[in-house]
Image 1 (cartoon, rainbow, N blue to C red):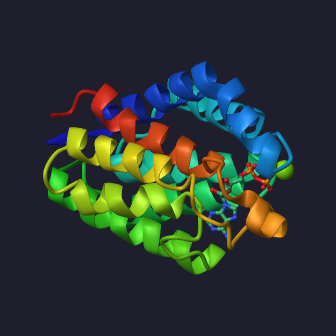
Image 2: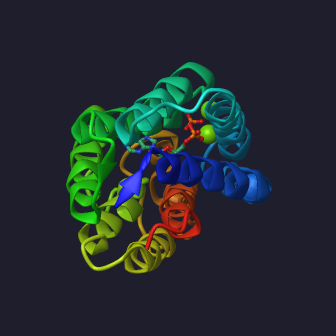
Length: 199
Ligand code: ADP
Ligand code: MG
Ligand code: MG
């Protein structure tokens, strides 16, 4: 079973990998964006980690809804509201249970991803974070490691795509040949599940 501390570790593991990969995320956002994705998420996940370290919420759902709220208030740009919605909606779907199992997490994350799709209007293949999140959720029933691998493959597979949503879509054909920064950070978020060590 996955308790509030597992979810706190998931968020702090993500904060650590976002810190480590911030320059790369920003570099990916330079040819097809405005070169701020790494710094945007770094600011957001640092705020999440600080808040969770100071006063850890008591339930899995509360950890994620608080993290989502903080991302919305600290991350500028497109990715703040999108990641914030992902975590808030996932947290809401977990309710106020003290512990959840892997299947409940997979269902909740599916609700979170659906909310991101609704908010941003992106479908799979549009070269966004959705291209990492959807395969991850599909694989989550197998294991966290399977979800991590699926997200990473999904992120890599955005390279030949033409962007249809977000800033990169303004480039049209010229967005082809670059890996999407948001799909890349979404793979870091999913990898955080493995690093949190729940399975
Ligand atoms: P901004 O583009 O406002 O500078 P970021 O650079 O932080 O925001 O985030 C860019 C990422 O957000 C993109 O790489 C893409 O994955 C994701 N993104 C942008 N628009 C959408 C959308 N409508 N739906 C899903 N993801 C999106
Ligand atoms: Mg950007
Ligand atoms: Mg920006």
